[in-house]
Length: 205
Image (tube, rainbow, N blue to C red; front, side):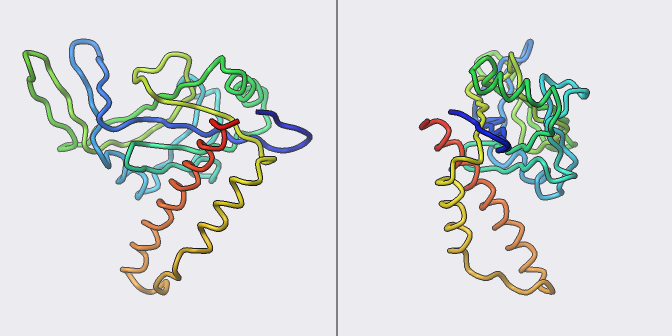
């Protein structure tokens, strides 16, 4: 993987995996399918950070430098970092493999979780969460996450994504409530497809 000239690199990551248990102190925590769907639909103002440090900003949904999406496996993200020393350092550290995992900060609304005892151990299942940040981290709470860097020089990924968009059927008009819902769902599927393509291309190089 390399980046040349003025090409702007993008951070791509698998933030969370569904049904992936993590031991958090005295209990085990598991995020279930679609746990982040409401947060994404509501367009919550989520930041991309480094090690959850609010001073080390890498992207933000509000200014469209951070995209979040769910697929059948979990939560994904694309961030377009600013031209800052923090971002440049992070990109280099991810590119060279010093940092390659992700984490996230969240709260659980009322009714969004279930506590139970399984084989004498406490289990917390989360079905709905509010997101505050997604972070490239040195030590994640959850395993099996990933972070990678891609450069805009990888044209094949963009070409495949462009072809995918062109293949989508025209949506109902803007005045249709059903159309708004379909449009939102389609946008999420497109982002998820773009993330999958980018991850695949990065991992193959």
